[in-house]
Image 1 (cartoon, rainbow, N blue to C red):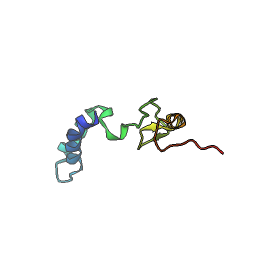
Image 2: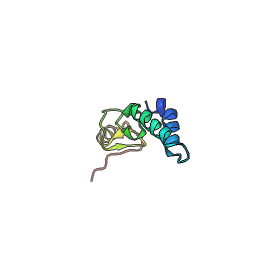
Image 3: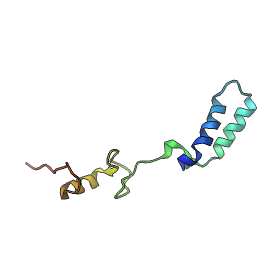
Image 4: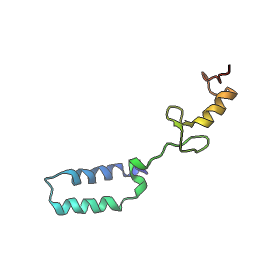
Length: 86
């Protein structure tokens, strides 16, 4: 959804930030921006684990949560990761 509305959102933000445009146009652009879906905002995207869907403790590089990473590492499904024991 973010990619779908990215161009429209950036165009409206450019109008709003430009101080040379009349106040009425800037206000109208702000109202149009407010009418767009909330989930189309880039800041609302949440990193989630590809395996479990867990929203917290997600490693960006692997797109896995810490719990899923530990399970996969212990069973040897991820190359280069070995469970330590001493």
